[in-house]
Each structure stands twice: as structure tokens, then as C-alpha cells.
Length: 153
Length: 104
Image (cartoon, rainbow over all chains, first blue to last red; front, top):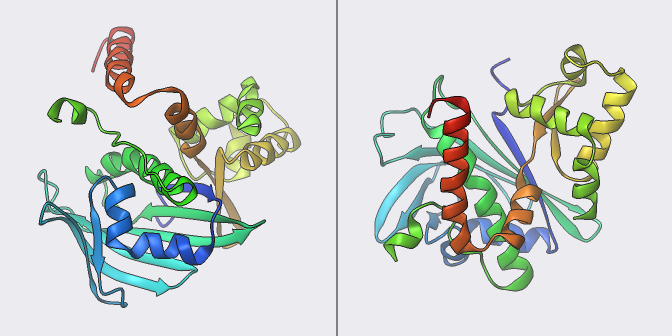
């Protein structure tokens, strides 16, 4: 079965679907929980999507589904680290309100066979989702997670 | 967080998580096929793991696919491992793994 998602992450956030959906599509908030990356798009189906940091478009894609505050998906194509030639994969967020919390289910699939992108994003998503939860619940995001980042600062 | 520790305190449940780590997105049937546990026992363990949010499920037609969800474990790490310890711990963990498996 190749059509099943490669991975599925779930996080419960004490917030509302509207606020979580807003955070997923707001560059100002994403810059905080996504470690400096701004999610940039007109948020219409078919519109361009980009993750922008320091004025550079690091990852690009197309908005595939935009159904606030229930579902958001976009294609995902890294433009860095020699990953440019890989075909785009697909990111999707599903929001569900359960007991005054939001169940946020994130799936990332449609990777090409032997994808180099897959192991990189698989490791990164839990930190981004935890940071998003932290920002929405406490008003404060988490520090960046990646190795070597502290040496640069 | 209590639910996470309770869920992880059982060797059978940890084995189920290991199986999902090796191959994500398995059905109950697939998980049962390779374990010396009854279908009922596996089903009960999976329910507890899902309650603790260590397993996420996705429906594909009539099938329910199970995924390892590392997010709660990440949250535990965030709580007790500060940002400055992290890179040192990663280095130690990489070294242990390299020495124990004999490769990178």
C-alpha cells in the first residue's frame, strides 16, 4: 500500500480551532513557533505557498485544500540542501474540537521512493508542533531544536 | 503525562511502539501477525496507547492504520531536557549507537 501516509502526528492544544487554524496560516505566529520561518501564501486553493526566512524562500509549494477551521493542506518542496530535484510531498492538517481542546492531526505523505526529504521533516515536525502548542497555550514558543544551532549564536 | 508514563510502563506496549517504529501505518491484523499476543490483548494495548496519544490512527476505507506518535515523548523531553543539554546528549547518544552497532 503506497497511498497511506508516511507519518501521522497528533497533538492536543488547549485552544479553539479558529485560533489554531489562524496560527497555521499566519506568518507572524509561524515565525515564532516555526523557528523563524514565515508561512507565506494568499491561502486560496492553487495559490503559491512558501516558507520564508531571512528574505529567502526555503520551501515552496501550492495550497491544495483550504477549509478553515477544519483542514489545510499544501504541497511541500524544499529549495535547499540538494533537495530541489525531489518531487513535492504533501502536508495536511486536520483540526477537530474535542472536550474544549483541539486535536490537531498532521500528516505528511506522497514522498518519492527513497526520499531524502522524508527523514529530515520527520525529525522536525514534533518540535514545530510542540512549539505551536506552547505558543498558543502559554504565549511563549520553544527554543529551536536543531543540533549545532546553539553554536552559531 | 500520567497516561504516557502508564502506557510506557508495559513491555508489550513498548514492543508495539517498536513495531510501529520499524513499520508505520500497520493495521491491527498486521500487528497481531508478528506478535505472540492475542488479538484482544493487542487491541486493548493499542487503545491504551491511543488514549495516551502515543499512537495515532487514520482510517483508510475499512482499515484503521496505526502510527507511532512521538509528540508526547518530545514534550517530556522538552520539559526535562533544557536546550543547552540537548546537543551534548545527542552527541553521547550518537556515540553510544555508533559503538554498539559498529557503524554510523
